[in-house]
Length: 416
Image (cartoon, rainbow, N blue to C red; front, side, top):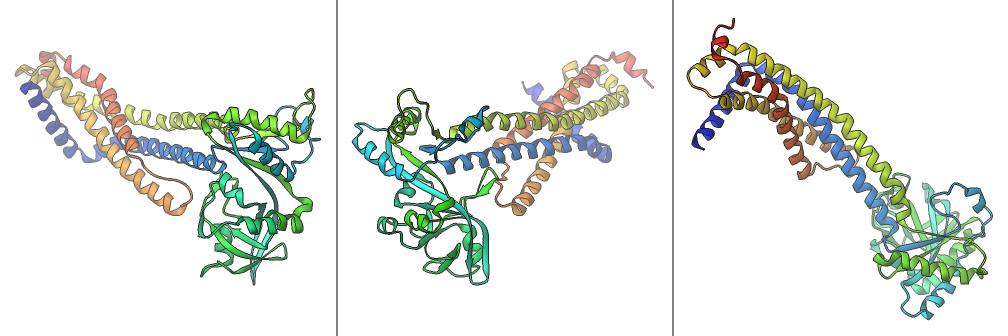
């Protein structure tokens, strides 16, 4: 064991001496590994960021919330057959709540009506366009991850009375109130005045398609009074236990059939949606992107490994006499094999460390440029990158090291 440790230490010293003696060649050789580790680390970080952003977007829908809509979120093949479905009325929510209260051991908590339109929001000379205006009631906060960073949400009195109050998203505050608190200030929504009573905490975008921060919520009666003519409605239903979502969905389907007064032989003329509909569709796409991305970036690491193998073969040829001398003085095959394996591994480790430093700096720059995208080099990714560097060095150096260890001492000493 002591001999092995001595050989290992000596091999590292020889590897470092060779790298110092051939600095330019060592850096050029390690460049392939640097690029490979940089590419793999950045791709891994991007994949992790996409996954985090995807999960964050899914969380906005709520794991324990069911949505009653006119059509499914993921269009079926025969989507045109669904075009004739009747709209979902906001009155259904009150009917559902009565049925939920009358159902023993119901898996449902509360049904919340929501209607929405796109409008412009103004204050003095400032205006924000394409704002999603949602009409809802005080129960909305139960069936949504929304939280107020300032002020409060709509209460029951305002909800029933249709008071002209509004809870605004982060982007609305940024666009209309560059400085100062917006609480108790008045804004114009579609030309109608509303007093701000709350500011929703920043939530980000949903799959990069639209921003949840570019929304405002107002009491449903006020919404129906001013904007109800061209609106689209749905009903959000809070579930008691998210692990029993399928059971809750079946219960909600039965209740909605009663609300719609559908005969037993009639098909459902509504859809029950949940976040799983998006996940089941997008997860395979996300995984395919991850596999393809890692494969493509892995090719650059493979090219770097070939460069390490090539330069190690050159080193073996250049030092054939040295190998012969060492073997003639009693060096074992294991000692020679270990020496060249460690030299190739040392080059790959050098490239891996430089690649990780460059990846960290790149991620820091991207994080500063795009703060909404979750960019972070994880400890797991650093460990994996270093293990990949070591494995690359061992794989690239194995053939040259094996060749060196099998050299005949007499033939090696005569080599010119």
